[in-house]
Image 1 (tube, rainbow, N blue to C red):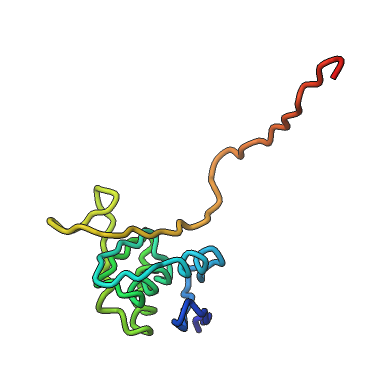
Image 2 (spheres, helix red, strand yellow):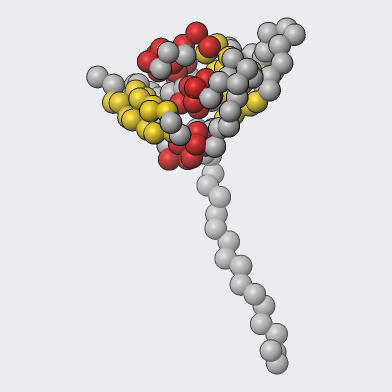
Length: 140
C-alpha cells in the first residue's frame, strides 16, 4: 500500500502518494511549491518530477499543460497517478528523455521551467574537508 501525505499549499489541499522507488515531497519541495505563482494559460516543464508534486501544483495554479521529465519510469507513473488524484492528469504530458536537455515537440515553447533535483549521494571519492585558518602576523 502506498504511503499518502497531505500538504496544504496556498488554498490547495494536496494528497500525494509515495510509490515504490519514488520518494515523497521533501520540505524543500513543499517550500518551492508554496512559491509557484499564478501560471494561468502557461506551458511549464518539470524536470525531475518525482511524485509530480510541483507539476500538480503548477496545474492547480492554472498552467495549461505541464511536461514532466524524469529518468525514473516509476516516477513518471507516480506523477500520472497523483495527477489523476487531483483531476489534472489530462494536463500532465510525459516528455521522454532525449538527446537534448528538454526534448520538446517541434515548434513547442515553454514559459516556465521548474525543478527540485533529487538529493542523491555522489558516487566516487568523497570531497575532503580542508580547514582554513587565518594567518596571525606578529604584532597584531
